[in-house]
Length: 325
Image (tube, rainbow, N blue to C red; front, side, top):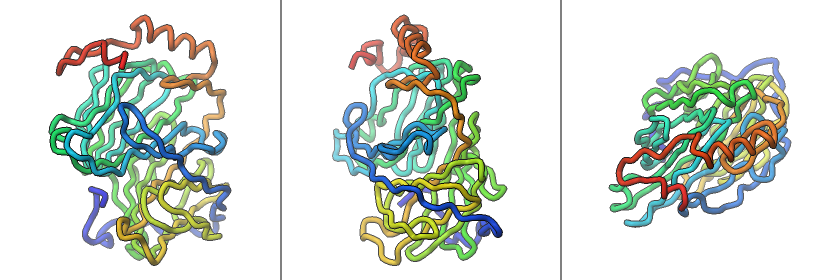
């Protein structure tokens, strides 16, 4: 159950289906492979196998969990560098601590989002708080990487702490869908996330049998990733389920439906909808760096090795050794 919800969606502003526009067709449905990240927390690679021309300006997205940790099991990542893009960490359920070498960070939990613009570069760590390591518990979230255009890749780093209470909540005309606008705009309603690259990020919960057709900027791409549940996408009702990504073609709206019958462990259809204005620039991506050319990648590695991306703050016993793990 996502943390951000309401008892009666009909009390929320409603997003009406647009008229006179073409609904986006579904070009492909892919299934995310599963793996492990950082010190061993389970992830699904949402965009694996999708041609970048359909993802631009998004680079990658991992679904972290959903996992119920036993005491002593929660894991995070060691200190690591970033340059040239933005990381968006959305915690659906659970709690995570963040810190970076630029002074940003904090604790995010249950519907909070951490939006970190790496820009010219910094060091970063994500880890469960000690209390969660001791007790265990539910952990579920997303991390999305958003590219920056060449003109912004070397901008000063920035950190946004987006609390769950600031997310814009909307619903469909019949109240069957709860729409959480985290960033961008949906039908004139703006989410709290400030983006350099124009994007829209929405977490939608659809009750069994519900459907929603949303207006979607025609200059944006369109992606739908299923966090949990079963349903269909597009006018052609292409089936989708947990761990699958739908790639939409061109048009002014997109449609998502929840199946009448859902699994016991996923009572609703949970979908993340993403759209962005393609940057259409060359991309050189290796590990934690996303630049435009190979020479810029080499410079990023050199700057990291020479300590130009920052130093690990000496707090909570953390030292430079965290970078070697």
